[in-house]
Length: 374
Image (cartoon, rainbow, N blue to C red; front, top):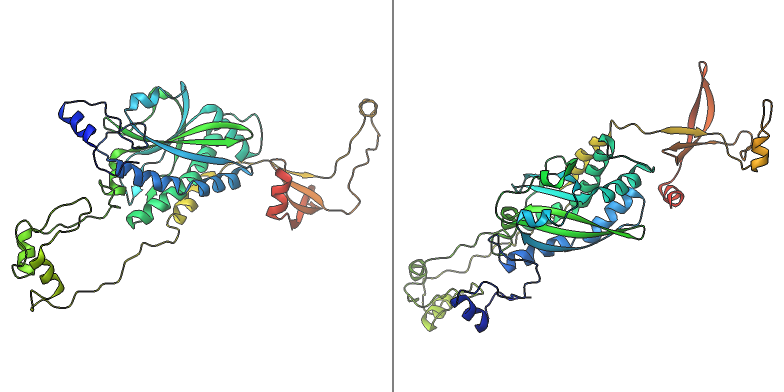
């Protein structure tokens, strides 16, 4: 990783007008007005929440899903389009609070279908309105830890617009304005296969997070040497403060004496202030609660199962009117209540007017439900 300094070979190459310098930055590209320090700082934020992202999507799909990466690239929009299949699912969620700028996630349709099937608990899903709403919720849960981490970095609550998923040709992707965009590429492993998920940011968003110079988003105030002279009673000369890489002033003997109180008797005690730490509480709770509302009007199939049994084919072919089929349930034993063929509760059969109903007597524990799904 580069420490921000240039080697002599790199300086010579710049003087000769050479633009193919191989900086050891750890990124696939440079540009977009972002320094290596900016990109390192932003990449560190994203890499720090990958484990939480994997946990969130695993809980949502009831499957073990591993997200790795990401790798960070600065590239033109056309270069990104060359990496994508002809048809993709785009989940658009521009920043609405704490940051301003464009933000979206891109996945291929195969990965989108697989994710929707796992979340809905059924196979043969099509990318209809229900599946796309489900994918919006999935991406929201994946992005949530990163939004919280970014908010902690800039000490603000970061929110996005409600995610909106669309199946579109790649040429219709809404890319951030500018010559360069920031692309975070994740690898997602599930059921023995690996897919890619691309998260897109504008370079302006990254600058807002890192402060444009990897300073953590905080502005640094630099005093004029005249102000320092006034503060220390003329103890500093024009060459006593130099802008080094560390940003610390370099002082001569008189200036140091003034700082320590020996050269300026009128200098008072230093002002001591308490350190202001960022709020470490979850800052995206209201955002997540708002996103779950996207699924509230989605219909799901609920069935009540009286019992099951297994029969030989010859016995099944011999079934006729009046045949009695013995089930695996005992008389009076609770019946199973299933949602999308997944057991969620047990109950007893009742009669409501002229219709059958079921009274819930037991809710299946989350652990039992997880075991049933695996």
